[in-house]
Amino acid sequence: MAGRLASLAASPWVLRIAAVALRPPCSFRPANLSRISACHHDGRAGAVQTGSKRKGCNMAQAQGTAHWDENHSRGFLDNGRYFVPERERQIGIIADLIPQPAPGNLLVELCPGEGLLSRALLERFPDCHVLALDGSAQMLEQTRATCRDQAGRLTTAAFELAQRDWRRFAEPPHAVVSSLAIHHLDGRQKQELFADLAAALKPGGVLVVADIVRPPTASGLDIAARQWDEAVRTRALAIDGDLAAFAEFNRLGWNYFRNPDGEPIDKPSSLAEQLSWLAQAGFTEVDCAWLFAGHAIFSGRKP
Image 1 (tube, rainbow, N blue to C red):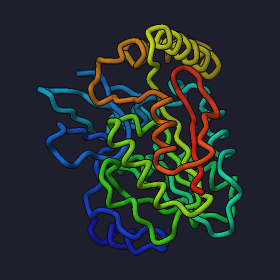
Image 2 (tube, one colour):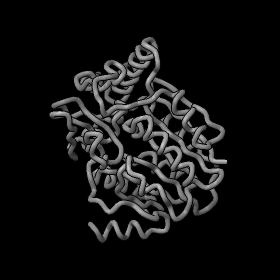
Image 3 (cartoon, rainbow, N blue to C red):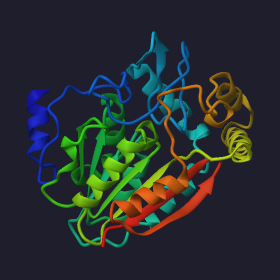
Image 4 (cartoon, rainbow, N blue to C red):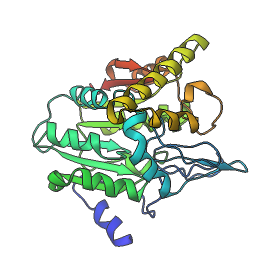
């Protein structure tokens, strides 16, 4: 493992990634512990959960701590196609928000999960390289499998989203993208991440974030909850012709907007706050390109 991480750290793109063992993506711990594993998502106590707001991992809580294992990654791979609203459209919009890169430019994805977005970027920009960072060995393996036809232009590495050591690159990225991960950072950590990525990007580069956002009003929460339910119903019927996946979505209590204060590891901020934080970090052309079912795609460009 140490040799593998050393090899990754010596790649043309990664200046330094913490030499830590591959971990589940969401082994979230109390705030007084410094290590918070990269990315994805949680689950209700005692249940294996999968889905859109918690990409690739799920949390179970015990005595104030959160526990996660790779079985939850398997769960996301099974159910993510149902639980992510308009998944294909989201992937397309994220790619559309990236300006045409120069040949050889670097694109970075934080928490790729299944690898569908990384694959889309490799296909859309055939002269670029993609660096995919995740905290789950299983997710990194799945990303490599999903992107096997473009394996020569993909690098994967383990990281911890809340840590700052991975945010320095030998080559400034043309774009950094993230889907369904950043909401596990609190407001201060999001602001810190946006500022660090603004510093890391090359001039003209973009940060594109797809994530759940918290509506500031009760009516907004209700609308988001109803839209998400309907989105999962629609996808379940379209994919399988029945509502079994929607029943599982409900059984797991997966709709964050039905109980927004139920899981302390879910920390979505409002869209307005995050657009403001992007501007404060120095991004220009800050905008929201898509908003549905409490999920948003927003971005900013480095001048």
